[in-house]
Length: 255
Image (cartoon, rainbow, N blue to C red; front, side, top):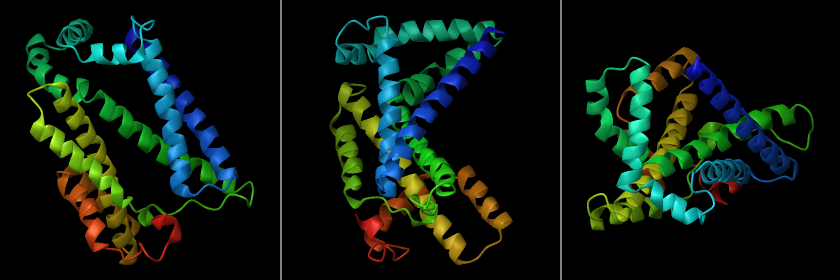
């Protein structure tokens, strides 16, 4: 019962945050912002709210936020968090041996990558807010045009330097030092960005080839089941090859 209540509260909080992102996105749409700027508006709103929640929810919230953030990645803090989460999972009936075997993966892919997950989630949330509220407002007022098709998005070329910086940090970092954690989070975030870019390219060609809706959905399902590295590489390579040949034909994309 407690787990269900926590889940419902988390869902309500997520909807509240999405609603706030929708309000700021709606404001940006009504002001005539370009699609990319609208998405960034929603992204920024979500990031601000999540960061505020993180700071206020800490036991040491009275300290300077950066101190709170640093302490999150101290080994001692992880052990405390893991002990609490482990006890909760044991009460739910999860086997102790499975939990202990999952500990390293949990720290590497979830705990240490928390900032990357937050940034990626806020970006996807900003994108969803743009589409949902564009759909609503475009039916209410002519001031808001229909949302730009997903297949027409192009990742700004300078963002590739984010991947380069992440790679340099990972190479130069000591094992599990702050540079290693920062590099991992940057790498994860930009990986998500270019995976989205890769799916935009796939969507473009599925539309161009006029495949039936069933085959399009099946194609996406197949891609999701496969390693996403190839989709990410497609998004990165688009910087040089411009697979869709639309960078120079759409002023919004180039801006």
